[in-house]
Every structure is written in structure tokens, then in C-alpha cells.
View 1: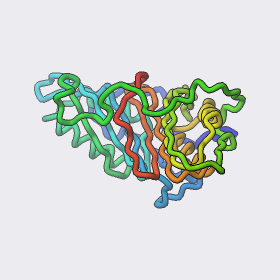
View 2 (view 1 turned 90 degrees about the vertical axis):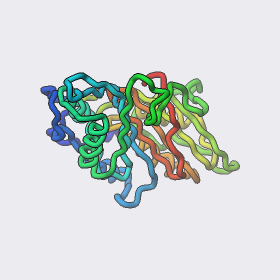
View 3 (view 1 turned 60 degrees about the vertical axis):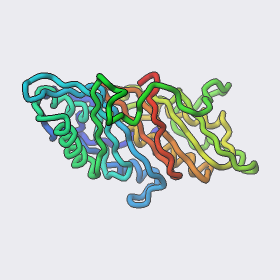
View 4 (view 1 turned 30 degrees about the horizontal axis):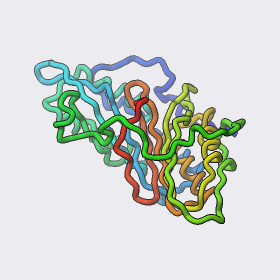
Length: 286
């Protein structure tokens, strides 16, 4: 069954919107993580994972005090234990509100972003703002410094027959009688859909685990089963994590999805229970 999450009626996504080019922090629209996690039996304060949501903003611009435009790429790191996420269209509208606003310095922009985003999600948000020129000489490199590939075995060429396009953990199979292995798999075939507009969201997903071997064909079928699922990126990754953890019971697990950008923003949720850190990479579709 495709369980579409309940979303607030006044959410900006899917609504006709007037774009504002003067700074306005009220444009940010927080969404609670609680409801989605309740459906996965995740209790606040007792998360089965740690991790972050890494957002990359490719269209950040503002004016300096002489009125000259400044342009940058920004990275925002939201801890997964924050009580809220930010709805993506509201994030875009908020960043656009910087376009005709004058700031004293780049550090003033960073401070403003940290303050507003932290207030919206209810936690400290990491912010890096990087000039487009002189990337290699920049002291504040983004976490994803180059375009490459995930260091994992792709399972996309496996011959499988797929008939289920809604998340189905029963598809996952593991060889519980075999020796413990440590493996990392990746797939470029993840597609989910916006819970409000139904628009497709494309992603590559990285799964690393230690435990009884997971049958690769079953994992590919499970990943593809999200194809008609409607939910936010962060919630989809948490569903994957909890399904694999419950069904295959690995000793250690990491799930990381890198979604393609929309409206100048990409969202890359990372969840782990073994202290892994997100690979410092940006993929070809990003």
C-alpha cells in the first residue's frame, strides 16, 4: 500500500507563489519529522541511527554594500535529530529573498543563514558558502568537492523481474546461515515522488552493511519498489534504513541517497548506526 504522508494545507509546494527578492526569513516552512517517523515506529529521543541531511544550494546570490551581485554555492548540513525539516520550495523562496538584499560581508550571509535555518529546524545547522572562482584555493571547501562515483558495487545490471512499485520490505532477502560479510552496494535506479505535486524525484542510493549477506537481486527489487512512492527525501531514506535493519538485521548499516537538484537545490539524506560519514562526492547527475 502506498502510504502518502499527511502534509500541511498551507505548504508552499504546489501553490502559485510570488517570488520575493528582499530578505524574508518567514518564508521558511518547517515540517515535523515526527509523523513520518511514528509510521516507522521511530520514537523521538531514541533514533536507531545518526546522520545528517546535506543540502547543496547552487543558486545563492546577494548584493554587497556597493550593490554589486555576489554569487556562491552553499552547503547546509541539518542533523537528523532536529525536530523539523524545511520544505524545499520554501527553502528556495527564502534563498531567492537574498537576491536584492545588501550584506556587509560573506560572513554576514553565513551568520544569517545559520540563524534562520537553525530556528526553522530547531537545531544547529552547518553552513558553508563557497565562491565559484578559486575553488581549489578556498579554505572552506564543501563536503562534496568533486564529481565522481560512489565507491560500491552497482547492482543495476542484475537480471530481475519487477512487479511491485510501492515500498515492500518483504522483497528483502538475506542468507542468514552464511558468514558475516561487509559489503557496499549502490544503485542509480531510485525514484520517488513528491508527496504534494507527485513530480518524480531521481536519486542514487548507497547502502553499506555488515551482517549476513543480503541477496543483491532482492535489494534491487526493494530499491525499485519506491518508484511510485510519495514522500519527502529524508523520510524515504529513513524508511529504507528501518526496513533493511528490521528485515536483514545487519550489525552495522548505512544508507545514503543523493538526489538530483530541483529549483537549484539538492537534498542528500545520510543515516548510519556505525559511525560512518558521508562520502565526499558529488555525482554526475548533480
